[in-house]
Image (cartoon, rainbow, N blue to C red; front, side, top):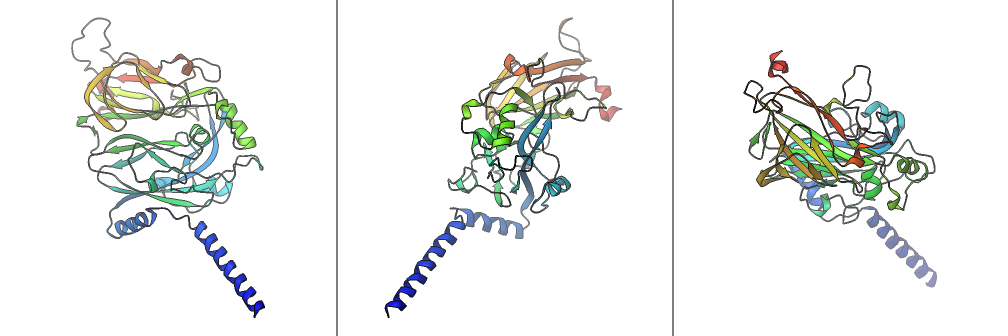
Length: 394
């Protein structure tokens, strides 16, 4: 009888242990069941506007000075499609677009429902024993007021997403919300965000309209910084605990430094999306975003005062004009630039009332030196052209 009791006790202990282990692996999250149920119901009703599949991985990005920097970041397949689990470097190259920092913009419409699916595709450019081959990630939708289960803060109560895992975020955009936002990883933020894990999010009510203002063209400009030496050490040895060791040596605009912004037929790395092209009589919207470790960017376009109409996804009650705008980490500004009608009479001989090329750059001079070279910083071209040169009039 004693032997039977011992055997029974053993099985009870094993059952409880397995139950506890199974319970732990379930990663129970307050609100997760409601989210998954909501996604299912909205899908059945055909009320999910679009599903975005974002894959996190690592890679390299070449700079204008020839420096090739190791980055972490978000990428995706064509049209943000689901291409399943990525298990090898070859699959990553075959199925996903090359890694870009910042990640490609996600554009949403007010009053609609969206699902964003985070896939951890794994790290493939690191040293074998670096320790970051099993790093977990999240997405924090910076500026969107969400419930904790969707907020992307690891273990509060959201679990981090490890290689091979996925997590679905339901984004229901209120009718009254619009403007400029961003997404970024919130695990070990110093390493992950500064390593390149961020992307812009645009919410619009109507095309070519924001906060009741209309515009003809828009440009999304993301200012950020990176320490190339720190990133290489991260690639080689894994997590660096001394976050204060970060010393940025590249200051970027849409992940590039000047002169990547100049279009050249032989260039493989220039990004013309940062070049602000406008025509006389037009209104141009610049969506300005920033993330950084300690650098405060000072956005300054030559020849124009911009009308600041919104900040951090909210319309300003009183718009104001600025020619130099300080922007810190996590901030976003929506700025309108009214291009003069060149057919009108000039106010003065030297007034900027004609077509031409000027620059827009970081006026914090430290930011204009990347890799020890000036003006390799967050600078681009402000390219004003006569109306007759618009694509519609050619």
